[in-house]
Image (tube, rainbow, N blue to C red; front, side, top):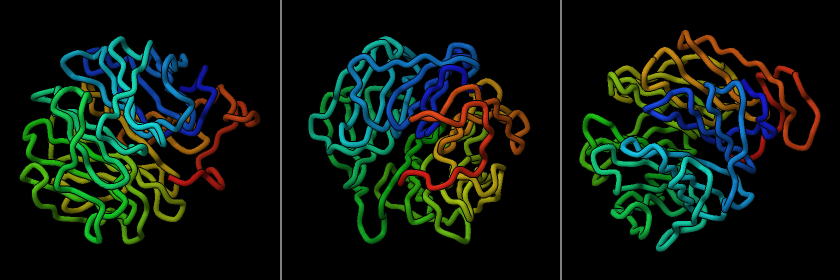
Length: 288
């Protein structure tokens, strides 16, 4: 799954909802794009600084529009499928960990930054803070998704091991723990055919991997890649049996059975070495 993917520290994944062979991957240094389901990747960094790409979001009404949330450089936007990127940071803090687009009004975009969640109502041109901030209740938020069937329902994952849920557009929140440990919840995806089904990527050696909820986040169970530093997930919108997972220093894994994941590594990790070597439990990964 990793031909041409020269940086195997995966931080974000996004699948084109109109052509699921098109996949974007954000790494510790670049954005990569595949046009054939992940078999071959091309670097897409024109205008994008050499920063960690924590999040990718595709406009479902115009899939040429892609947002990238980065470390130290905020949000970038591409209007041409990743060929050219433009910074969009008016009112936004520098570190952005997640970007989510309102599927009913794609001019409305949310960004998870260091101090909480910000909102834009004009496609990223201007950002304002929302009610969800990093407080003693909501600490170190790292991921955000919006229920496609009810855009008042938000889910946000945090570094305290909890997933936070709002049923009123972010005015109030409840929490549920993914595991008994406290892994970083770095990515969340919602099943487009059943919004009660949610997947979470947990970044931890002792309790990391992919987790699944079938009751809207109230409870969670392991769904594969046990004890793996799992950073990001993407669910095929046209075939929900297919899920992609990005791991530290291991590239992209693909599952067609919802719990069994396969990897074919043909590229070397950033910095060289390890080409063709299969790694499920990378040692000493970078901090989330």
